[in-house]
Length: 155
Image 1 (cartoon, one colour):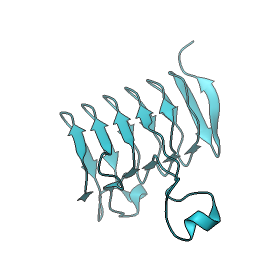
Image 2 (cartoon, rainbow, N blue to C red; image 1 turned 45 degrees about the vertical axis):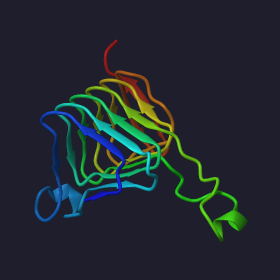
Image 3 (cartoon, rainbow, N blue to C red; image 1 turned 180 degrees about the vertical axis):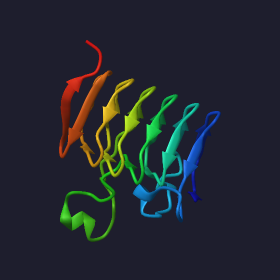
């Protein structure tokens, strides 16, 4: 489903599977594109595949070429609510957000969460169930909550 997206670009050979009986890991959840800002931007490169991926974008999401995103991954570039409880009672003014960048040939494992302001370097792998709160360099395997580098892939 696409809601109020101001700008979206999708490259060649994009595949997003979701719904009933598509992938046993995705628990039959629906994937979605959601923006909460009129000038939000989603740019998806060539040969990108995802399964029941949910994207909540306030600012910008950039996904490179040849990226694989596992079942039920959440990509969210906003805190969705302000930290100050008094402001939160009446509005979302002051909510923090920052772009997400996923470079070429990245693989993000199922049920991971990628938060605001994160860049995942080219050819890196994020292990299933990870919570990605900071940048990761190219050519690494990272996993956990919070996600951290486990090892480098190419010496």
